[in-house]
Length: 102
Image 1 (cartoon, helix red, strand yellow):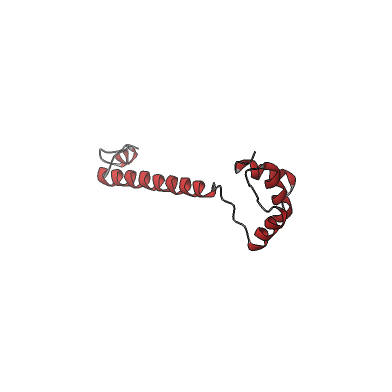
Image 2 (cartoon, helix red, strand yellow):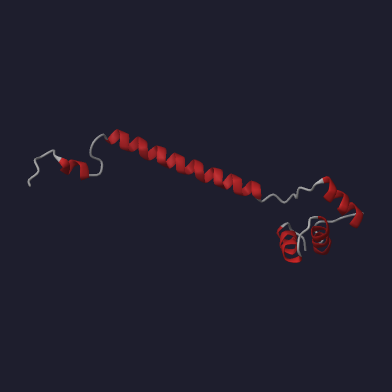
């Protein structure tokens, strides 16, 4: 089986065919990857918010436990987390430390 010049041998070569289409496809792929990367980064940063969202019931519970609640004090933060947000010692301790309590 012999191949003549211009047969399937050109199809195996990178850059064969319309070079313009290959270049556009490469740019689109890079832009798409960059967009996905930026969206993932933005979502990750948004998830790292230091503010905790509380329901009105949780806010009332916090008010009953501490008249001047300081979320930066580890013992108060863990106590409120366990009592008002139904957490356990390990998860509350970790959560409070991640939010900067000491």
